[in-house]
Length: 128
Image 1 (cartoon, rainbow, N blue to C red):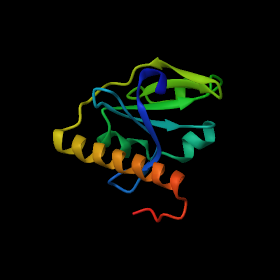
Image 2 (image 1 turned 45 degrees about the horizontal axis):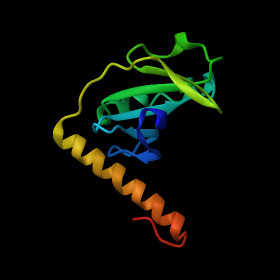
Image 3 (image 1 turned 135 degrees about the vertical axis):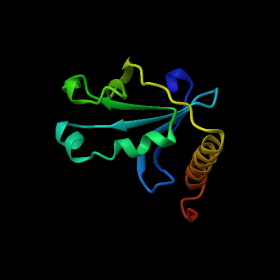
Image 4 (image 1 turned 180 degrees about the horizontal axis):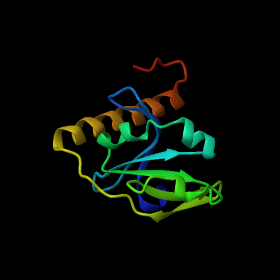
């Protein structure tokens, strides 16, 4: 995502209490959520992904090239990734967030990014 100029926050807690693996914010303000699946069992056990869709313009799964892609839902995008990088192999359908939800998510993203930087500078700071 960084190669596409997205700023990225990992493990962002969403307003519904769910935790998104990766949230990206594009230069134009688009918000993407990427759900990372390490194996088929991880995908089958964790079926919370539909609850992420209302907080992003697009939802992707990121899996290894060996993952059976036919298991992944067609209403999401697909990224193939390994430890060296990744690429989008199926674009996600885009459903633009309402303005109020976009503002709330952008603020949540900004605060999480700022807290991450603060913790790097001073690990003793409590996260609020």
